[in-house]
Structure formats: structure tokens, C-alpha cells
Image (cartoon, rainbow, N blue to C red; front, side, top):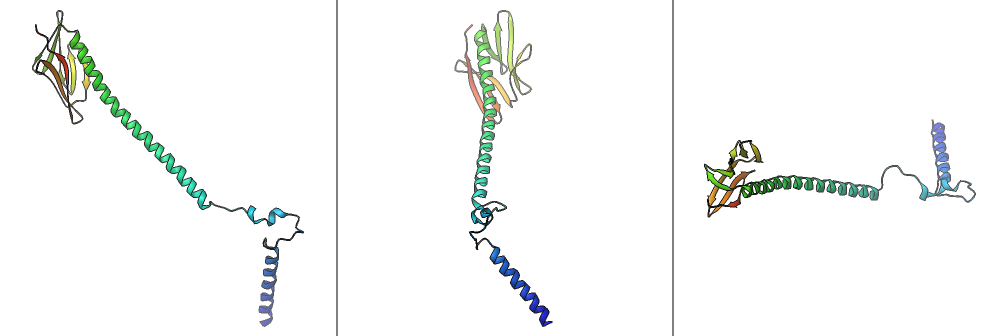
Length: 173
């Protein structure tokens, strides 16, 4: 038994000496394959800390750019709805400017053009012109025309925001 233990220990000792002798720390100038012995060219699996941090930085920059694009898209959609209201007000002002006479009757704006009479009023969450049912504004909660200080005004509630505009100065008959 002593002999077998001695053989095992001796073989382990010989293997360890061969490993040290063949390791890259004991580079011999006689070696024909210098690339195998160069520690700077050792290949590692995985990432270094600097590479991981660079990757994290790049992903944060991409994420921030995506957020910026999303915020811009949200602002553009809000601007489009406000722009729709502004165009509707311009159309209402044009309709009233082209009419011969306009007045308020039951919170509706009555426009007379020659022999024709048109009414602009709030119906079914819309400001629409009848006859013909031409829609000027939609998706509004309230809407009314009123006369104040010689001006015809439009008052609407849109997305819980109260808004009012001067449409036209009233014309005397």
C-alpha cells in the first residue's frame, strides 16, 4: 500500500513538473511557435468590463432616442388636433365673412347668403352646418354660439378644455 501511494504521489509530482516546464511562463527561445507562448495573444471567452460598459452605454443611448421619438410623435398628434380646431375656426370665419347677414338664434349661428339660409350649431358632439350637414368640428363635449359686445363668439369644450373664439363682428341689417 505504501508503494502504491508512493507511485501515485511520484506520478503527480512528475505531471506537475511537466506542466510547469511547458507553461507559458517558462518561454524558451528555442520554441518555433512563439504565438503559443505569448500571453498578450491569449484568447478569452466572454466580455471585459469595458466592453460590457460600452454595450450598456450604447443600449441606453438607443433607448433614449426611442423615447425622444415617442415624445415627438405624441406632441405631433396633439398639435394635429389643435390644428384641426384652428382650421375649423378659419372656416367658420370664412363662412360668416361670405354671408350677407348673420345672427344668433337658439345658440345657433344663422347665416344668410342671397336667398339661402344656413345654420351652424352644436349637434351630436359636432359643430355642423345645415342643410347639408357639413361638419366643422367633431368630438367636442359642448358647443354654443353667442353674441356679446357686438361680436359673435363660439364657445366649446374639447377634451375637458374650455375654449372660445371671436368669429365675426355682427353686421347691422
